[in-house]
Length: 101
Image 1 (tube, helix red, strand yellow):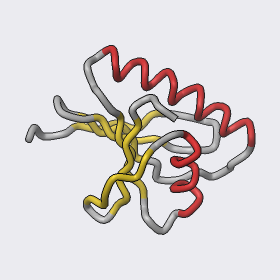
Image 2 (cartoon, helix red, strand yellow; image 1 turned 180 degrees about the vertical axis):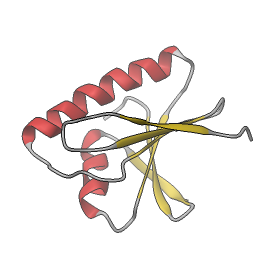
Image 3 (cartoon, rainbow, N blue to C red; image 1 turned 90 degrees about the vertical axis):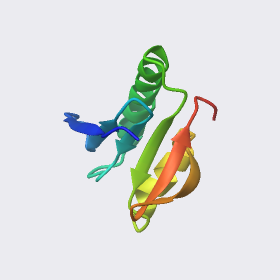
Image 4 (cartoon, rainbow, N blue to C red; image 1 turned 120 degrees about the vertical axis):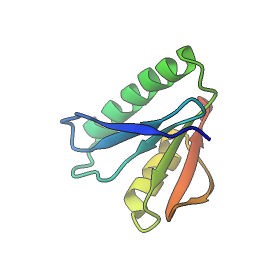
């Protein structure tokens, strides 16, 4: 497995995203959602769609998300966005997104 790199995406819409990636995968980490409104949800849907297009363009077949199992709000959000739970890894719940809802 290749060593992964990561960076934070500056988003001012009330949530944080950290992207971890290597040649094999890309993972979205959602450490917090400070405000959850219909506008924030719409922003997330639009950004996810754009990020999914980008990921496909550079050759990824899926986008993963890793979140704390205790954060029920973010776990429910991922379900609503079309992510599917696949397993636990390094103490976090791991989801997969393949563009299908």
